[in-house]
Amino acid sequence: MKVVRKGGTEKLKATLADVSSKQIRTGIFPESVYPDGTPVAYVLAIQEWGYPQGNIPARPVMRPTAEQKKAEWGRQIAGAVRGAIDGKVRIDQAFDALGARAAGDIARAISLLTTPPLKPSTLAARQSRKKTPGVSKKPLVDTGQMIQSVSHVVEDKS
Image (tube, rainbow, N blue to C red; front, side, top):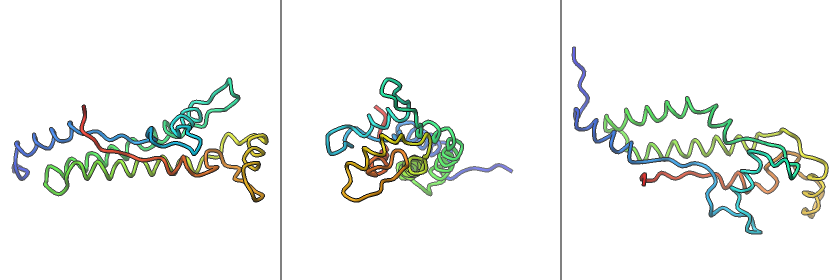
């Protein structure tokens, strides 16, 4: 028995061309800045890799999340391609859903990070900016702006 997909070879070629012409970018983009103008991506890069000269330890979230989730994300892409070949979904819609999922996974990783713990001096600096007593002892979540800045875009490859 021979299995033939609707649209045959032409539909397959068109779908693969559509897939190969698009890309998903997920992360923190240049337009996201803190109130003082500091780019959020710059702060995340320092946290991701650490800054020994500034006595800031690495608190990676992007790389471990991508490594941990790559199989799940790969399955979602494969399902999207199958769905597009069958005419059930458009690639840009499927890629948008995957980008949103990846951004959510990264934001969740930021919110769950607890190590290495913050230094007493960092906690004191956080408290000095607050009008009420008590601050979060979790790294990366002082204002919530980093989590809110994680997003995605689906675009044509250049």
